[in-house]
Length: 241
Image (cartoon, rainbow, N blue to C red; front, side):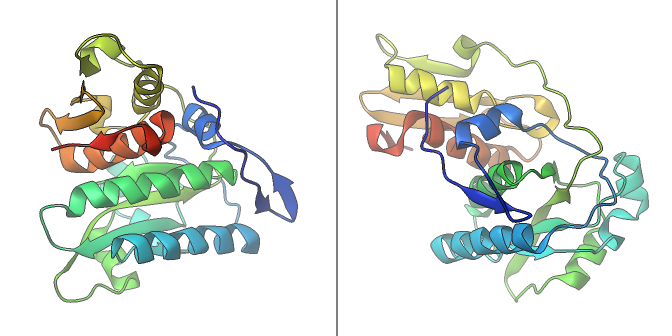
């Protein structure tokens, strides 16, 4: 994995350090959480990043703290969630690019949460959407697509087997080192049902990322693109459609 600058963040008045690359390696989906409240410093750090993402993207992402109702439903229990009292609601204006944009910025928040010592899970269906909507402000023309559970995990989750790099990408000629690093990061990206239905291709310095279909595939594509950028370095390539 590429070496990234260490960016300090605060947790309970103690400085912690973890690179984005280290967070990608350490982060796994967690569905069961301890009954430990989020500290004021952690809440502040997450809210600051949410505000930055919203300003940059035009999205309307919101955080709900100490709100258990969205995960006290039949669907949440069916999804084997327990102890979830905090979540991030991924909301934005309806449009063809909404899901991908929410995936991109949502994963940015997921990796910050990991660096703050928190755990997360992408949740598309198995939560109480009406309860979440009642806690959030959703303007006309906006849509709640999915949420991120947030808190201190009962475990750190487990890694899932990945497809081979050759099955997930295509290059013409020798693979540049920056592209390889981008792919290593993309292979760590969470995807719906862990199916990794994507293909990243390189032509010159232009890179394309395409979904191969499947459940919430556009959200997956945004997540994958964020991982690839963090691994490859945005200065080394341009996205091409």
